[in-house]
Image (cartoon, rainbow, N blue to C red; front, side, top):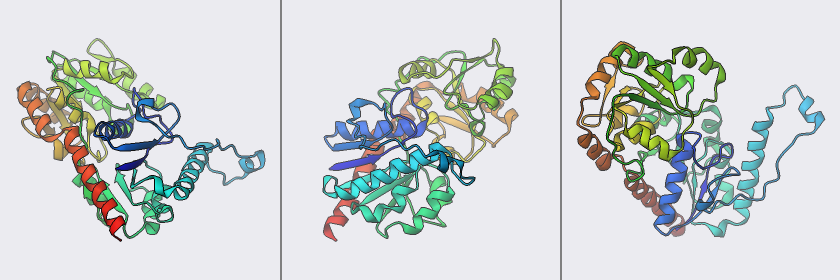
Length: 354
């Protein structure tokens, strides 16, 4: 199939990934290309050239001094993203014969709102709980638009507005290879308040297990207030690692902690850890309840640090071979791509038959 993937215009699709959305886009595009599909990716400048990224000719938007002086003017970054997606959708409409299906893998509202005008069937993946912009855009979506949620928990949050199918995310179990384990716990992901790595540090300390943290830190105030004071000989921040280094870190860890204080839409970091054979101890929030289960990991009541410390001690004793086998059977990227290819084929076939 000829597939257009609309990705983030804010962060490039390349390592080290800004977050799970960028990692998901890269894995999906790579898997589709490996299977022989003709894939074009619209993404931010600087994305991985191996994905055959198509950056449409969108001139950077810069508002005039008078426009910036308007008291109601939105932030410049908002205007640049709006301009980029508006230009993209207009260009796709002008060249509709190029593609069989569009996969909207962005978090922007314009691809949803303008899908009808493009004339190409579209599948939108819902990576987050409902947001006002995307929710309102669905009022203008085509009756034939197809929506996919990354977990049943996320799908349930969207059901008052739309009836999405569910395609669980997947992880490359060859890249995230089985590791030997070790003595330290690990937490990896974006260091932001809603993912609460500080609670992982507290739980590890109460369990008497040292912990390593890795990931991008975009919120300087949060890091200064909650992370820096907790660092020490038993809690180390290793920075924003590339995938190869991250795989080695997770693989040589005894247990992985996942500590969201929001309804995590899926929990890709948990799947990555289990693919390395590293058992997971996680708060039971959002989609984590669908992927973290024996023999791969254990759940704790949300926000209960003492309970998580106890769960951490029990999870680290889970056999690594069984954890790895669980990930291979339930969390693989191959299964995810199978599901997306089947969805794309159904949507494109229905459009051709109409």
